[in-house]
Image (cartoon, rainbow, N blue to C red):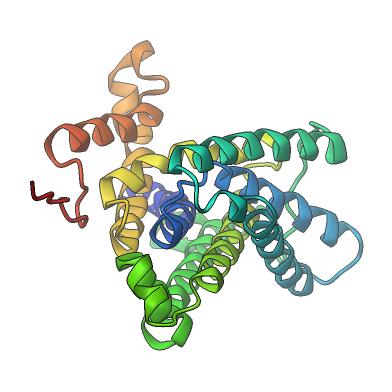
Length: 298
């Protein structure tokens, strides 16, 4: 039972990161119909900026807030400076541009910070643990769960109780109708990209904490979070959050219980399992758990 509890909390922490990354995908897609393949690199930007600011002598809390703002502004600059020029063009062109931007950002991170792994500073001892029952759980894992829960709750409050949230919901339903009603769709796009950048930064900071490290490959977590987008539903923020948390827990539990049963064939089975689940959903429920099937009338 103690082993299960330890794995479960670790899975919640990983799932919380998946949920943040997947929500970044969905926020941008709902607002502008663009699937941002540079979301993982924004996560890496947040992680590296946090390490750099912390090592410059800033208090951890100040460095964290500054990291969120900087990463959000980088994401906003991408939308305003580059993606905005492709609004009237095909969605495929925008997607190709985000793939190109992902490569450019990754190269930029390597040029600026190199490829050496770095430890993510924490306001507590990085290996600190707390006892839950008879299990020792890392404080970093609990902090990741708490931070992600707060960030996700803030998003849904913004979405339901603020003017920009109402505008985002209207734009996701019908951009042309929103424009005709005087909703500033351009500002909605900008807000969506800024929020996605902020959430990528939160994910990058807590993903880089012990036992992981920060290096340019940290952005690949976006690929691991991709199944949550499909399973939860590409247009359902609540769906991808639930799917992200569930897949994180399933992945970690599979690593602890299923992998040993498969012997040498099960060494990395837990990393493949979310994709197997994604394939099943693509076959039997392609619009996801909470997505709505698209109905076209001839």
